[in-house]
Length: 186
Image (cartoon, rainbow, N blue to C red; front, side):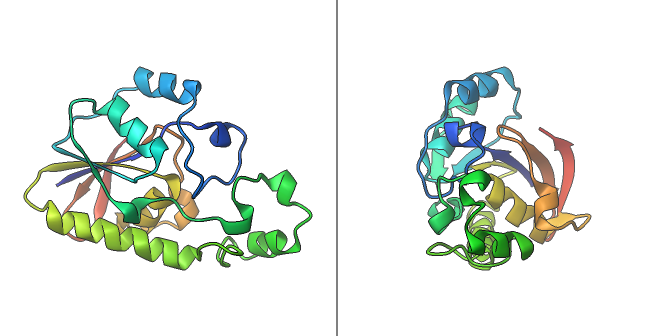
């Protein structure tokens, strides 16, 4: 099975380098233009996060395909860090503890990174089971969602943050039922 993992197009929060997780931002004009300039592989099924930025991205890339929405693919809730950048958070002592932990501590009043990753993996496994008869799936999701899936299933194994990709980009992978093998970068 071919799995295409695409991070949503740019939002204003992405441009401003803010933690945008549960904030339901739309794509900005630059993000829309960049998506229209890129080339994406065809697929049988399109699946996305319910967030506006992902649904818009799916509509731009695959305008003639039905988009299957999966709530489990929504981005992490960054809690008190939500909609702030590193400068705004620099005086927050918990933010420094979070940085020092390598991003493993829970977000204050938000989601734990471990819980977020488990949710993404569970949703990935669910869609694989639901669509096992299809030969190609495009997942239009968030950077953290892609990193969670790749950290768990990709070979060679790499840590979470090593799978970061830019907005509108991602990975075309072969999936053998156990592992994702990167065939091409988008």
